[in-house]
Length: 391
Ligand SMILES: *Cc1c(COP(=O)(O)O)cnc(C)c1O
Image (cartoon, rainbow, N blue to C red; front, top):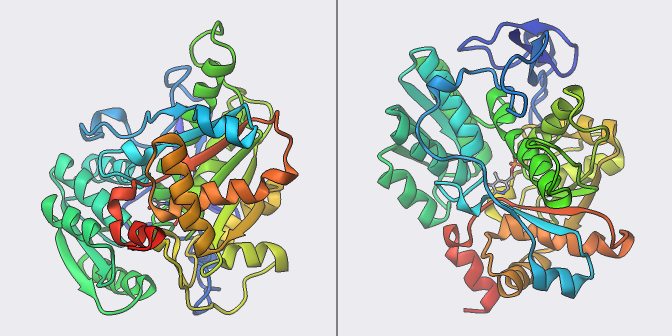
């Protein structure tokens, strides 16, 4: 069994090597202020020869740092089920990842790859969660981590970075600026970049959530079935900024289908904030337009240019995905509804997925299986939550 990268645009193959991030040919067509061109996807040749019910990944398990990432609960919020009438509603709860967000799934795979290849340092740009996540996983793995973070990132995320012992470079400007600065740093110094979308392993690492969801749904719906039995949700609601979680979730279901463990794809909903909705607008228009400066209370999904936009749009178009856009008021109301109705306190980005489900719900059949992905803990952005409370 051999792993390789394949260009999501032209299909060209590349070896999985440090320093290989995008497809050379397609990246030449990159325009300023547009999503990245030439995004690479991980693929393998031949039969998956790992455990029957395992997740195929391009790095051997022995290199994974000993931090308990993934295997997060999929649980049924009984009161929200009663309130909404959706009796098959679940929350995929990544607030209980070690650093408090879904980003740990990507950081774990990047750190494992660094250890496999003898790389000692990782650099990245972040709105906050990727930085705190990479810092945590780097601490577990014994890797040096340098993060480029906008000055206005929520304080809890900055404090996490420092507590985990990473080097913090504060950027005067937006995440988009931090992205460029971190790329300049990693290409000049030769350290591994964990920039989301740019490093293909960030997409691949996130697919683990779909493998878990399918097996957890299998257990929930068919308790007597053998271990590893999978079921597909009808709808998955995903908060979307750069579109890497979205693409990772799709990749997981695509792999499951290829492995014969599921027989259809779910409808994936890209949930975006009104003030940062480039992917939803592109799905409607058929292409990306000039960027609009982002402005939303949901900092983790606030991007001017969605780095994985082209790739994510392609997945939505291919699989009949949908988009739903919610206002900041709906996000903040959704945050409280989720917290007070289920006991799960999520950060505003994740509340956008909940609010997106609420907005789409009138068009759905109440017997359908719905999973809302709750990607980050509310404790990571207290200032955002205070706005919702009028404090
Ligand atoms: C990064 C992040 C998102 C959005 O993921 P993208 O890949 O940027 O679309 C959603 N929720 C949380 C908590 C995040 O940290």
